[in-house]
Image (tube, rainbow, N blue to C red; front, side):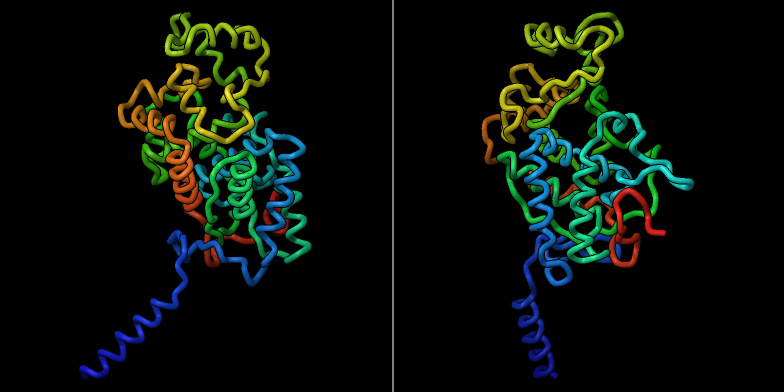
Amino acid sequence: MAQLISVVLVLGLVFLAFSPICFCGKTTGGYLYPQFYDRSCPKAREIVHSIVAKAVAKEARMAASLLRLHFHDCFVKGCDASVLLDSTGSIVSEKGSNPNRNSLRGFEVIDEIKSALEKECPQTVSCADIMALSARDSTVLTGGSSWEVPLGRRDSRGASLSGSNNNIPAPNNTFQTILTKFKLKGLNVVDLVALSGSHTIGNARCTSFRQRLYNQSGNGKPDYSLQQSFAAQLRTRCPRSGGDQNLFFLDFASPKKFDNSYFKNILASKGLLSSDQVLLTKNEASMELVKKYAESNELFFEQFSKSMVKMGNISPLTGSRGEIRKGCRKINS
């Protein structure tokens, strides 16, 4: 008996010794892991990277757009590419929701990647995984951190307009509302502050911060937590009415470089959106994190990578759930 136990133990240790060490996310029905396509589509990551690199070289803003696309997907029904679906008879697209309408972009880049992957390995790589890889590549291409992307997500067969309207944090939400929306997805205050750091690249429309310039609390007065000469500068291109679509850099200091200057701007009371500035003014834990990340780019990058993996693990479809779409804009017939 003792001999049998020792054999079992030795076999167990051998199994552990040769088990691949993996940055995996346990999900219902299976694991996500970086090597998911190594056999079925070995060139998948290379194809995604080359098309994202071409798109970002053509238009630097696209990096932020692809990062935001992944975020807006994961916060609604999980990271399942529901955000990419167009409206059909049975599906009401998330593209028409308040957070997405006239602002979410990058769909054509995802289409191009999907088309290339379908030629290389038909119906193998999911649209959800394409978005997760594109978000990582966009970060790296603009000078940010890298991470191994756990893969193996499948695509949803439906969308949720109400989920898109209700679950995605809005620029004018209170700190507590934003934190609650993060917590409902299994994310915490550290993830909230680190992921907000993605606002180091990209743009915001006048309509998303106008209330800070003219009527923050409904009393006809501006938001005094916004540095006043910076506010005056913003008013020149963001009037009380009109100019809704005028674009402003989220991080005026280094708008096309992924770095920690976003946090330095917040410390100088020059966070563009209300949701940026409240990280400093409304919560002690988040205030301390803003200060830490403003001091250390390395610390910010390290946490951003961890939080992106965590966000990418929100309720993915794995195993036999969902499908691998042939095209990202519609479900398979």
